[in-house]
Amino acid sequence: MKNRLEYILFTGFEKLFHLLGLKLSRKFALFLALVFYYLIPIRKETVLDNLRHAFPSYDEKKIRKIAFANYKSFATVLIEILYMSRMTAEEIKQEVDCINLDYVRKKYEEGNGLILLSAHFGNWECMAASMGVQLNISLSLVVKPLRNPYVSNWMNRTRAKWNNKIVPLGISIRQVYQTLKEKKIVAMVADQRGPEDGIKVNFFGREVSTHAGPAVLGLKTGAPILYCIPIRQKNNTYKTEFTEISKENLPGLYDDKIKELSQRHMSYLEGFIRKHPEQWLWMHKRWKH
Image (cartoon, rainbow, N blue to C red):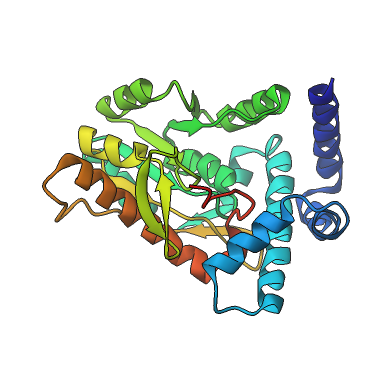
């Protein structure tokens, strides 16, 4: 019953935002941020604690300013995702400006498969949809099912609208491996907490577990790993640039290679977060183990 009620509310907002239009709907993000930061705080202490540990030199006023901006950013992303379901291919293409799209095509045409790696930053869902349209290539999106199955199915229908394929996380490794061996493109995010016994990397000065999947797949298949972060601009569109995570000068032992390659892409992400802290998803308990 709870899942159904949540889904009814979810689709109700979807219809409302389509009636209002995207430009006007985005203004609603401030109201949502005020509600879920002040009135019905959702994971507020987690956000504040994460920010305090990541930026120990910042005073409390600055920490709370970033935290509120983060809620507004996430609310904007939710609104955009709800609006995406009825966007045309041309509309979704205009949402993301890829600085070096020809570079992505060039790497794809080399015929080794391609891993597009990103994070819960800006609007990662919009970027995945837009990249598939702009490249005119079907991407295999590795996704984690949401808690609510109705919302999860809605999300997957929206993700697949522009000819992308959905690969559920957890049963995906063999399928992803095969996709890369077929010289196709796999897109995934890998910034959230890894298993307790997972690969340990340094992230904002603290040791943290991370997912080894991108590094393992990149080494086993030979597919290049291109990192891309969608950064929100003042006009509420996104700009991204693809950068290859180097596999040069890795340690000799296989496990050490995985650790070093994982560290490289997490360090790359950290650089973006330091520049635009309000656009990353701080609500996750990233440093739990």
